[in-house]
Image 1 (spheres, rainbow, N blue to C red):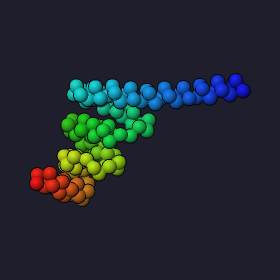
Image 2 (image 1 turned 135 degrees about the vertical axis):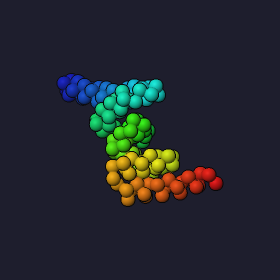
Image 3 (image 1 turned 45 degrees about the vertical axis):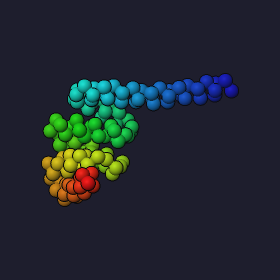
Length: 126
């Protein structure tokens, strides 16, 4: 009976530390991103994403980091992940995603994103 309790407590503690570790890594990446250390932030965010953590904010930052470093194929990948999670984003993300898609030759999808960008921009300026 004591062995079972001890095993259960150990498992709970291990999983708790794992969840906490992911939050710490995201926090570290956010500090680097805020200081425009995009390359370091990219590595940290990607490690967290590989572990299965998903966040719209994280995908925005990954996409932006690659976009502003002119790695548009990778930017398209992460903006794609963002748009898989939600369509409720600022208009500029539609524009950046469209530009990234156009750079990798996905012109039809890029046109769709630009159309959505234009619609959202018109609504915003009214």
